[in-house]
Length: 615
Image (cartoon, rainbow, N blue to C red; front, side, top):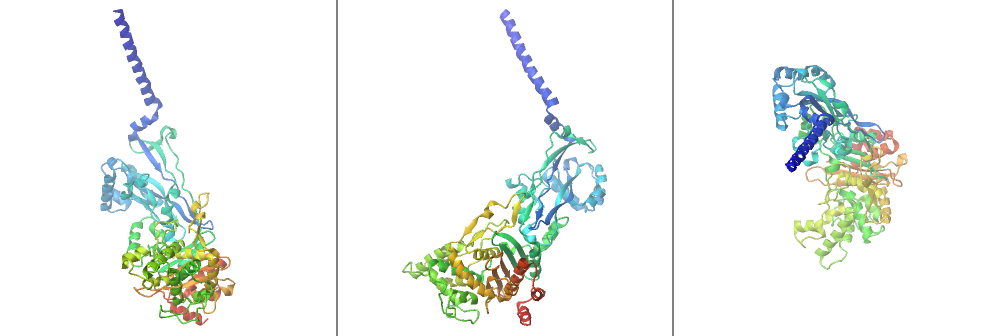
């Protein structure tokens, strides 16, 4: 009996110990640990997500291009909407009844218990008209946030725009951090630097009564977290040069890209036709976007980045460099202007050397230059010999940044095309094509395609005598510099000395007597220019005009490509526009007699030649 009595006290002690543990735990839960009270009091607490300030975007001079402006979103929690007076509600918000019904239906589809936006982008004035009446509409609340505001009417394609996160996006893991009503970068720099610009959200918990009136912070803000603003971006864009380029391209289709070859920083990025970036922000932006999308001129199309064209005669410079590297020609090599091989664009002096051939853009000369580079007798079979030659040629060409992404800091970059042996085997069959099949590559026609950005980068390569930095817009992120990869030199497979042999011909194109690019010359203001004209055959209409150049030739500070669709000869359309842009950047102004060109540039090339002859 004494033994059993002892066991009874042991069991009782265990029960008492367990009860004490539970009591202590309950005390901790109910008194000390407010997180459980927070979970239990959801009906009397309001969780407010603080959207951080999105980073501001500046130009190279420190002037604001894109900033934030306060707007308000009307949020709804469907489960909490009680006895909604739809007629009065719609009258207050100046919205159609069907729009209210559609919005509530979409909110219920997302979640009956979570807040989602019903009306977005309310201004301060619109908020004032409804705020005092929201107390009569349970389930509705105001969420303040910052919307994008543009201080420039230019650079729309590069800046991009910000838009609401879509339901489709929310289903993807990539957008797990976003909730309905959030905004994110949709295109351009806004999209590429979304992570840096968006910052980090904060959360606040507020006590509210049954009428929805705020009673103060919960537990003195113990569970609140602060938002962290996004990082600012400082761009390399020269605002005056950008504005000038867009003015000169009015009425045209095409692009202008200007780069500082010493750094790879993009100075101007013109896509024509363009639009005011403010069109894609604020109320009604969705409708305005659809108008732009339906426009047959395709103003939303980012031509410098995504349009791919045959480069025309500008590509002859690449073939020159490769032939020199392969040792099949020298700067003194001459070839006859044999029109039986390929027609030349005009009569000119005998191409006795590389400089004269470049100056006059002699098609037969460069036909023979590329033939020498490809047909080096590596195989007794003419088919295999040219196939081997093309493979080696393509290795050289791709080292110039062609047929690949340059990794510019914008989404949507196109690679272009440099055809390979396999490409022609698929098209014509193995050993069923020869040099005569592909000779158009020698003059930048045929299957070769480049983007205007790649062409501007080509000019950087020749300006730097053999290397380039990846083109980029952002000079600094926050208080740091650009992304590290933008400081890396990319060398071509061609030795520097061969570029030195090509530059005199490029200078003769612009500054030499009778050069095809004379309209880009700036010798009258003491600036030497090196460049190359191009006229691109277009089976769908008038030929396209193109021109690439850099200046000053001896110490380049700007490299530029101009591509104008259906504008005819590059020398009479694209070259003068490039000259104006280079002078504007290097001198800050344009000579008075050249200013007159601005008035006709949106017109035809023929009018320009007449005007110039009257000078």
